[in-house]
Length: 176
Image 1 (spheres, rainbow, N blue to C red):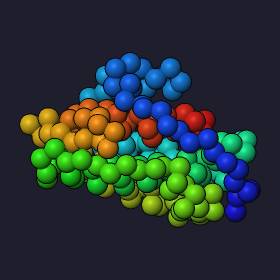
Image 2 (cartoon, rainbow, N blue to C red):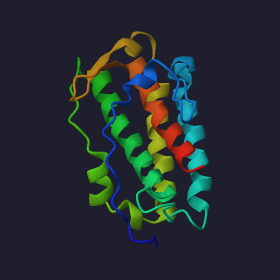
Image 3 (spheres, rainbow, N blue to C red):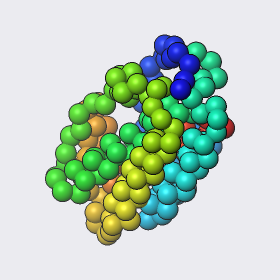
């Protein structure tokens, strides 16, 4: 399915800065989005991944140290799933704390490089739709509910939505 996966340098950046300024790489500006439209943005993003995964070279890494489009899509699928869980916690618990998620370990453990692009396309669409529906249901004061990442970063549902949205947008830029 895919070529042998090389070592990927783990991404240990704190990406919360995207809440304060546009991303100089992909151009995403979290401050400019209307959080009530995040559901639609997720659906649009998930749709764009379908074209990426349909490409015959979706499993090909552009270089041994860079994920293939398939691996990026697996990551986005898992981000959709993880953020749905975290959003549910924020909406049902007062100030929940999230366990750390090692995205690089997950990529290796789940063997992203060997997954089926067809299956990932279906799973990504379902995970995106589920998360989009959850964001569509947020209303009023729920946007101000809080949650805490294991490194101490605090989010409201509003900032959580803005922060989250950068990830799938940026990764589409990565596979352009």
